[in-house]
Length: 233
Image (cartoon, rainbow, N blue to C red; front, side, top):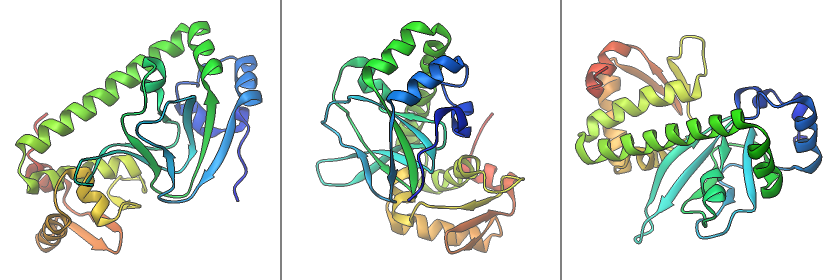
């Protein structure tokens, strides 16, 4: 089992909303935080439950998703090292409106409600970063909903590959993706059937836009893939 890192030694903190805190505040968080090792697919929090704090990803990746009345999953956001989870519901005083689960083995810390809200009051810069994060997450969600409603599935699959290449960032040129997403989860991220994802991945492979080997996808022609995704700057 992995050790839970001290906040002062956590590299992920440097790319999070906690990056500009004083040494004293970082030590204060460390003294009250908890941490857990989550296996792939293990639930972090459940929709309909009330938050008692926030979660910060030290290592690994997670998905935030909803389940509809028919039991279908829709992934609404992906999160990685340095990202915080559950903050919107905590600040609003609402129950979680979605689920969160580990996409791969992950170390995730938990900061209690009182400590987190106290930091927001003490550090306006941290509050501003949180507002920026909230606006960013909201924009991503709105954009995805609009694309699911308007874009053909073929374009959505191409764009998802480009998005995931940036999210996973497995190699220096950003073209190779070693996915922890299954084909079904990729379909849930795009908002389509698993069969459609498999069909279009095969089509892109035959057109030499990508190379597929197991869960690794290598982008061979980024410009062509951008055109296929119909992305307009």
